[in-house]
Amino acid sequence: MIDVRTREEFSGGHVAGSINIPLNEIQERFEELKNLKSPLILCCASRNRSGQAQHYLSQKEIDCHNGGS
Image (cartoon, rainbow, N blue to C red; front, side, top):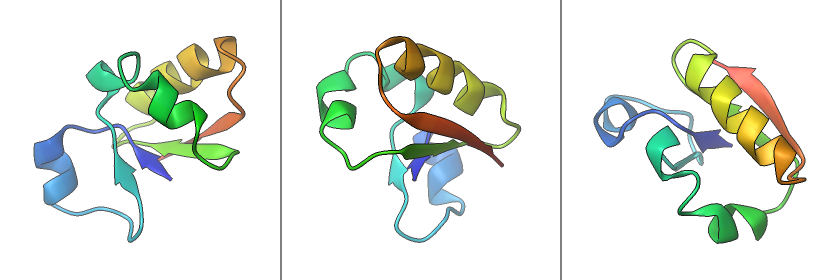
């Protein structure tokens, strides 16, 4: 599970075992994401940021799903 919230939001509480990759770092950390076991489940606070990440990664042929909040 990839949590795309900010580091501050993530440190305030997150799903055990999730990885924090803030939305604004998704493009620059693409190689790291590409090497993770898929499908990736993306989450955030409201489904908005995870939806943006899902759209971008899907276009790059990464198997991922918007898990929402």
